[in-house]
Image (cartoon, rainbow, N blue to C red):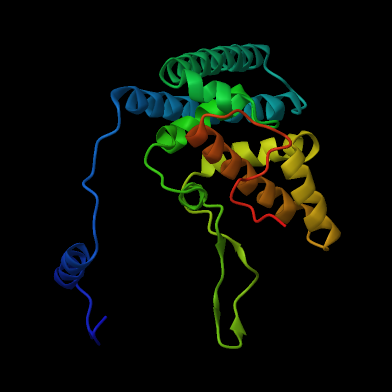
Length: 239
């Protein structure tokens, strides 16, 4: 910081200017219209899911009351039914748009054991079809699955954890996929078993599986080759 002694909006603007002058910065490009529309549908779907959860909790609380209003019960049940239908419609519309835009990529991602149709669509939406990434580490960092270490000399502040910066929704979906992947995906199963055998807790091993799934997804979409259980990298050293 060149021994700067103060902080202000002006100083911050100057540092941003110097960063732009010293570092190669890519010109921002707006997303495709279909991706913007899909993200808007995704936001609507998340709002509907929150409302559905709220109504479901209210319904459960009402049913535990000693005195239950039949009219209140009926209205909550109707609201829950309507919200459930709306969620299903929005999800179907969103997936239809994604399959129309990313038909080939959807097929490739669905070939990965552990990744289903919905997760494949959400992953392509999250990563924009993987067109703006140079390597899988960038995707993992954007998803907030990169390890974050906070140490200085002999001072260690807590355990090494993931950053959780970025895509919270895709992290949740990948974590649910990891339960299936550790059983059906050969590479993920080997990774999970190896980490557990070393004494790592199962949640940490599942997070490693999430990273593995992202790595596979990136490689498969970029190469255009479907998942192969016996695949071995051509870059791997030979004996």
